[in-house]
Amino acid sequence: MFKSAASVEKLANRLARLPGIGRKTANRLAFHILKLSQEEAYELSDIIREVKDKVGFCSICFNISESDPCQICASPSRQKSIICVVEETSDAAAIDKVEGFNGLFHILGGRLSPLDGIGPDDLKTRELLDRINSDVTEIIIATNPNVEGEATAIYLSRLLKPLGVKVTRIARGLPVGSDLEYADSVTLGRAIDGRQEF
Image (tube, rainbow, N blue to C red):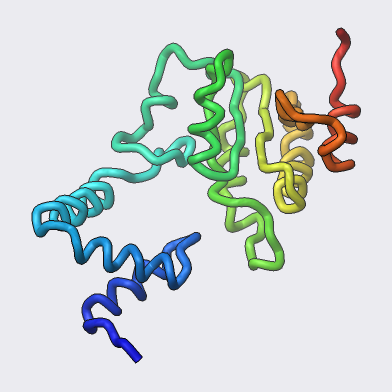
């Protein structure tokens, strides 16, 4: 059986520990890196080092940033009365691209998942509660529409409502361009429940 050089095997093992990277993909990536020129490999290494040295988390919203507070929290043009709560930084990036949203964010750093050992204390919920003041009029809960995301949304709603702030949930339903016959019953049900006056 073919055995890789120890250093290549070590690289593949480390790459396989990254989320979404299986053993075969890790091996392909390791061999691809091996084929890079020394200059390209060092450039990749330098970029990884630079990200680790320069990028941290905003002390207010917990978004990734090269400054503290982040550009969104520090911006005077942002609507400070609305905070959109998301699971991860990538979710905030997606919502920030939406035309018409100009509020702030709060990144929870995950979602409730008892099977994975993630409870309320593992999320940035206390920090969210600390951000609620008289300037905040609405909290938009934008967790993912799956079991864990729904449980997280319900938990947050119960925490936030007693504070007298308006709590909303992003609408769910059918994507533009889809056919009703191919939609699952849960999605159709949510589309019906979230209907608006025409």
